[in-house]
Length: 508
Length: 106
Image (tube, rainbow over all chains, first blue to last red; front, side, top):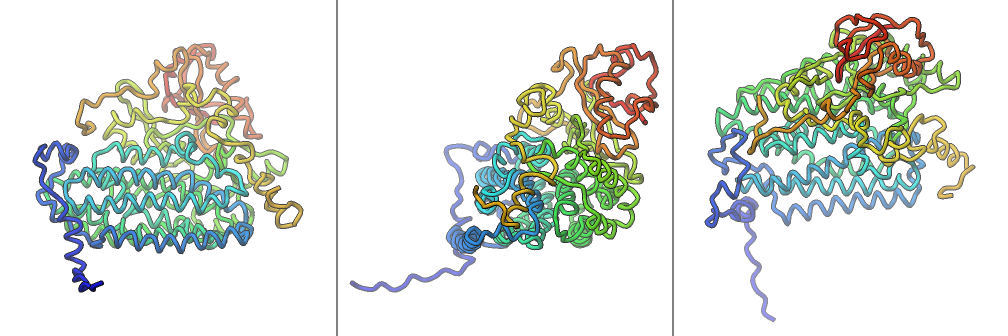
């Protein structure tokens, strides 16, 4: 055999150009408008698609090689965890309620993001953003899979982890994340980029993702921490894509600026409202809390975004999101108001809740010196009194929901933590309720869209959720006896105690 | 501002009154009681008398709070306006329409 000389290796930049942009062509059988029908109607103007800078210059072969290595490391951790009964090393079984919320609420969003980035990978006109969207689409699918695989370990031992996909489509608190993504996916491709890539991935990912992952590491959940690390480098690529998308669109045409500002105003508030679930989780659901919601909000949002990013965007004529001051004004209240919902309604949830104990309340009072002792401690003490008398207070009925964010109407006026905030709008002779100035503004901007909201409470009352009684609705949700309710005395709690005392054998 | 779309964007509301027939949705908020995270939503007959509504619908819900005293219920308001009229009158005659917000203190 004769040896051939090794082929010349191309420099990275050239390889990238050949393997991405150079694969583009001009259509000859159809017009450009027929090939890309969705890039005009939102009013965004792009004059030069080649102006898109890809900061990573990733190619398919490099991408797969890199991702495969990360997967190998993650699955080694998962194997070790399963073999060494790692689930017994958690801080407490109640920690897993946070992870139930994660797989029901976040993992399906990864899949939704995978779907929509695949659509962008087809329908954006420029080859470079198409390729970036394709990579992100594959990332999102990988995140969805690694989360399912990781969390499935817990499904062998604890309740509430089954049927998460069905639950995401049906259960009341999961309509909060689901409706946000449905809203984004039914918008045009550019609005989707600003909603998910910028407002969600850039502005709020750290605030949403880091607390879960630090919470995992603090509470002995190594597998969740590992998939977090495995996703982290992708997340930073997604954040860069979000920033590149917004800068590219702002530079292409001055007329794009007000359209994008409007989307930032809408999507900051949508994503922020959804993050309220994370606030409740951080402050109340972690047996070993990491940092308070307030501290995380100040660090990841006020310092990094308002202090770092928005001064840069001012150059393009972009100002901080409308209603951002309202978000800042409620940082001392948000988690307490939202966890109250979960505690009131956990009889209809696929996780359990409990009132914070004395030690936990001490921590909360330290974190929230302005509000906790005055407004929230007395209510939790009343719950303690009810429980001491053998009861457990649940909300005997269904809550009023916000037409936009779909969270029960629990939020209070910014200057009065004791006064519930009600906003109401009329459209085509019908009354619609929203929880805040932010959600009301979003509703009134596109009422034709939000009147179609699938509000779980109203759907139950229309008879579309399995039947009129609570057991029928729970069955339709896929929630099994013991997945729900109070944590103390729940099957998870009992198994945990039994396994640690050696009274109960696992798997029996 | 209208929704930007490639076609005529016109869809009915998902919770319009006609879907509930002779019934309607009403919201009830116990002001100043943080034991309940939010107002409650009920489906009730439009023709239901207000007094009966308070006794058979609001009462059992409010009783989730062991300190609830039905005789202390007062200051009813509908969409922010004080409620005025006889306890016998049906909800709709008192201006309590589909998705109206009722508030009380106790």
